[in-house]
Amino acid sequence: MSNIEKIYRMKKQWYFNRKDKISDDFFNKFREYPNYFFSSPARIEVLGNHTDHNNGLVLVSAIDLDIFAAVKKRNDNLIIISSEGYVDKIIVDLNDLSIRDDEISSSNALIRGICFKFNSLGYKIGGFSSSMTSNIYKGAGLSSSASFELMISQILNYLYNDNKIIPMELAKISQFSENNYFKKPSGLLDQTGIALGGFNYVDFKDSSSPHIENFNLFLKDYRIVLIDTGGSHANLTNNYRLIRDDMAKVSRFFNKENLREVSEKDFYNSIPILKRKVGGRAILRAMHYYDENKRVKAAYQALKDGDTQEFLRLVNESGESSYKMLENCYIDKDIKQGIALAYNIGKKYLKNGAIRVHGGGFKGTVIAYVHIDEQIEFIEKMKDIFGARHVSKVNLRSIGTTIIEE
Image (cartoon, rainbow, N blue to C red):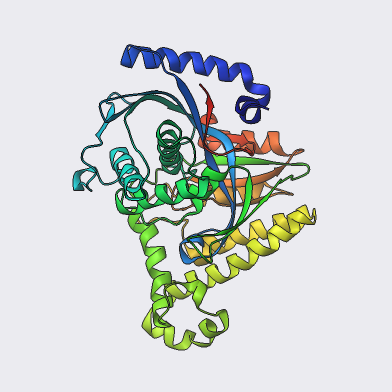
């Protein structure tokens, strides 16, 4: 089966129409036609909210939203990208791969960081032109930035390294760039889900070589619905950093690098002292971490056992924990409070399903597991509130970032 069939199945004609459109766009921008076409998916965090950066457990899956790219090699050591919806092209000169303060939080920084890491690991880099289009909600917690990172990494892998670099290595390269050039303190969850494709149970105890179990997820009678609340993560790096910093305060109290190295028993026994040393918010966030790891384990077992109702119970429990203990649903002085609104309204209208804050939180996306008998009514109610473009039923995708055809 070709990658086109694996990814698009019943939407093959839609794919070919999309290919024709992006080929024309490529010609209009570069006055030549592309040789290659790539796809890099979005991902959903099925369970495991803010656990990866403390070497925890996650359930993650690629989904059928993606960045789609037309590509042609260049011989001038430039990477030039034209993205649909943006007037200016991204231009990166590979002769200079140093960190630039004026590029922090930009696509240029991600590209430059990826190329630097390729070089430092002994891999080849080179120029290319690309036109890209995306149907991933930007800045909404579906990892559009990680999808872009893996797209750049996979293009370089295919064009200049004979496609020999394994997906997890590409994920680590991409995370390096996001941490060090883009300056976002993310874990490896997003890049792992996108690079590998499919549904995965991931244990980050050894972050350099995480334990991964791939699994065919099937939720009988339930559909996955994403509600994009219209906010953007673009200016929330400090909010994410505070979650990581709070957890780090607790682990440093025990002279450990992360919470995975601190026993839960020692943590609870030390709360009277921790309350004075690190404060209540850090304690609550650590409590969420320990409980969320246990939920991930239990949910994975429930799915293997075919116990959908137990899985949904654990998803709801995770939603409550993120809301009340991790505290990543509210932003100070934000009168819109999109995540909190979507989460609480979703809980009110769901009779048999489950709902939780998705990904980083604060702004962005809520994920709901909706029974097929309720999906039409639920989706329509969410569309009335958040807009038709912001509510999507999505499917899982079995293949990660890849070349589609040449």
